[in-house]
Amino acid sequence: MSTMGTTPVKSADRTLDIFELFAAEPHGLTIAEISDRLGVARSSTHGLVHTLAARGYLVQDGGGRFQLGARLIQLGLNVVERLELRSAARATLERLVAATHDTALLVVPDHGDLLFVDKVLSDARDVRTDPRVSSRRPLHCTSLGKALLATLDDTSVMKVIRAIGLERATEHSIMDEEELLADLAGTRARGYSVDQQEALLGVFCVGAPVRDHSGHPIAAISLSTIKEFFDPGRTGPLVTAAAVQISHAMGWRGDASSLYEVLEDPGLLISDEGPPVRAGIR
Image (cartoon, rainbow, N blue to C red; front, side):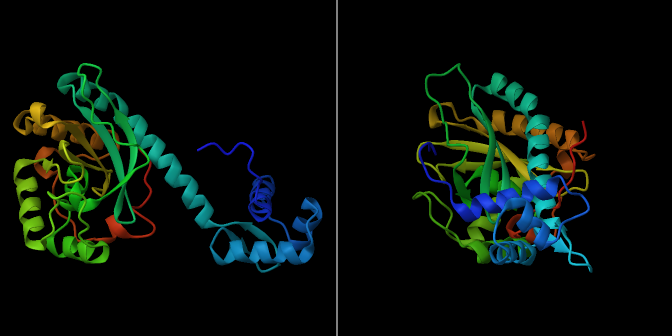
């Protein structure tokens, strides 16, 4: 959506002015200094600064000076991590699409949903499965989400599902906890997850998780197609091999046999902070 012609929100403008001001002042600023430099009333500055401090975006030292806080730094690192992940995955996804002519997707878990980071489309077929990169899907409805859930032990899976629910996306979505656990067990045994119209009618997918250097599941990839071209016995192992390759680029040292080594940490998929930020290894 275009923002041309819209009127800037004054408080948002002032908040961004404060961040930009602090970026040039590594030793911090007092409320009076911020007020003077931005030409904003002391009372307004006081309210904005203390709101940002309460949210962790600014921190105050013992002398009344404020500096950029860890929360803002964390947001910046999260952006860097996703850019590194996308860069590390891109060539592998392109080769995967060239070999299969399916659509490849890359996602990260985000507060119990999936956030699309990248996609690669094939020009070899007239029919494309082309979800919006900005769209979100529940974890249990997609090969991507099920690949991530399969990296957790059953107890942790249940904690995730009871926190986010089993939302129905299509008539084929799994709505029963025991059925989901059985599906995840099948995913671990095969080495790849399967989605047969569970998230979108007419779309069939295989998926696999991506791990970082400490083994945390930080992302997932998938191949999606239509029923006519769906051949999970062929494309499933290919997506697993690609996930291992991307995981190696992110510093992981495992192989396909350990890609689904289960963890006991539901917070990896549903916590507000998300997985710990770790740099990709080139």
